[in-house]
Length: 294
Image (tube, one colour):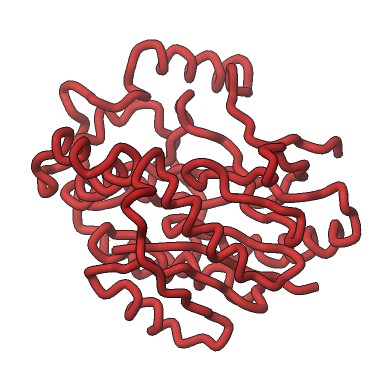
């Protein structure tokens, strides 16, 4: 069995993406790791080269601004990396996603178990969306609980929309099983000023540069993390590859008097109360996959 890791990234240093930690987190179980390195202006491609592992293959790319709409550039870049993978299984990580080292043996066993079962087209991870700091993760209504991050090679899997998940070339959802592992998502853990930069970059590739400039005129402003309600205290351990970055944290976030965060809306907080306290599932949850029976 051969395992390929893949990802894409651009301006990870400027936008505070833990891309090196992300790649290193699954490199021990990969036979190769392919990363599409966009035309960064902050030395990100050079940073990737410092990993200095023969299994890492860097594909240098130039981002097409015609795809700066609804995140299409994300899908195009992740597909470039996916198409270069040669493994039986392709393990996708976004540049702010990290796997705990304790999960790696079980993931290898899971992929080996289902290698000959053609019904299984992918594997589904449980998410921990850390928010504002490394001590809390969000469980609000608007936050997705699960997503596909391992796909079978050679079935025509394509990155879907803004590269959050995958579908077949004809738009059909993948048939998946649980991966039995957590995904540590650090996309919302940044110094407040860099979080604003990240928001502007996100808006740029989803709505275009003009809309991003209009909505975020000052890219160095302090980000509003909102009321900081609805978070769950994290009591476990983070992936070891994150230790140094976590130790370097030098910011403190305090609750805002008012919030621009969607999850702070009264309706969203009501849904969260009902879902987490009564139902234990999300009402109208978006599922970009078909879960096979156990």
